[in-house]
Image (tube, rainbow, N blue to C red; front, side, top):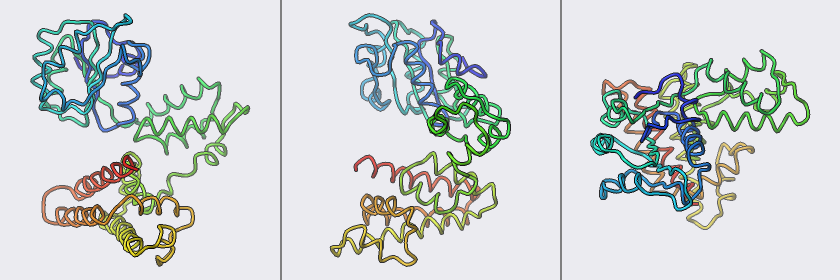
Length: 343
């Protein structure tokens, strides 16, 4: 079964006949939101060890029987269990198709995945099953984003003027989780004042329309893939060339590489970065120094190779230039995220 137009309502109250749900798409924040909403609706919380089990889909490759075992297991404390399976791919499509044919047990299996094509075996398995469901998670459009803004602020007891609402809707989106964080920040900022005006949102959240090439490079270095995609989309929409984007990120990596070289000679990150010309913008010093500590010379060299390959691919293949560049930036952001996780 394909869930369309009522995904949030379904997540808040899953159909009891459904044995497994696939949540997929490019909006990782919305995937996490719906995953957690559904888990709480069934198990009461997301961290009850007796009612919630979670593991990566790769575990099913070596032990396919685990899917049925987990789905059939009973909670020691009673109540319905939730089995959360992360990062599934098409290689799991056949396994789930067989699971739906003879699914027993009371647990709800929730599977997450990235973007999947309509022909994806995994999508087809869930969409064609009477006891399965699939819901896509795409970036909020203007209408759905306004709904998120209104409901979040209403829950907090706040009202918002039409101009302020329009300003927010123009600047949020791309990742539901990031939008929620910005709105939570706004709620905290307002304090006892319950009426939000345009000046309030501009002061609290800032003008993300001014996002620059530096913002993109630092998002890549931080491993913030959602922010990277958001800035990239805005820059390309404004007409910034892909070559300029590649050059800016490459320059950032080369400055990190130069700093690492001085660190290898015995200087600390602060002293090494202070020698760069032009100097690092003072508001970005902490982020730059943190990246210099995390990205080693091998990773930086590999990152520069990825950017070079992207430029060659964009110039010599039929792949759209923006797509080739964005794919390379996503690879780099994944590297940045892995360095942050090891910190």
